[in-house]
Amino acid sequence: MTGRHLRKGKRTTVQDARAPKAPDLVGRDFTAPRTDVRWCGDITYLPVGNDWMYLATVIDMHSRRVVGWSMAEHISTCRP
Picture 1 (cartoon, rainbow, N blue to C red):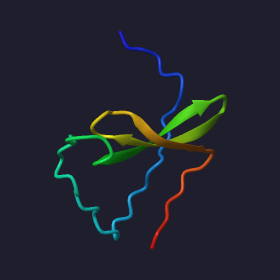
Picture 2: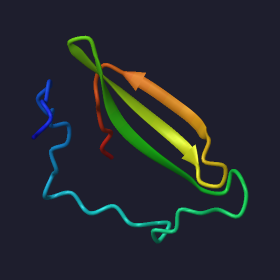
Picture 3: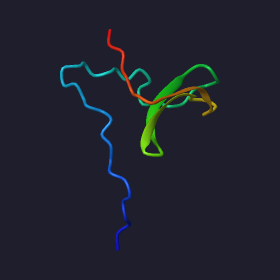
Picture 4: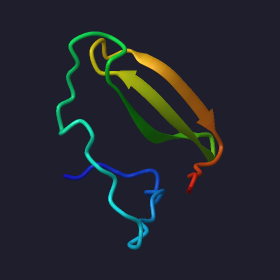
């Protein structure tokens, strides 16, 4: 038996093959000796009615607490 999927998946990321890969500045080590030494971030999308909202968070790697967040109806990137 299989569960029923009520929503279609939404593709939010289209990789630019020409863009350089981002460096791994933390060496896959997601620990920190104390607060405010190392932060990480993530973006996710949330269904809200018939639309989507995008949530960006910044998390302290020591305390695992959210130190900053922002929501928007769009996802955008900044290019240098």
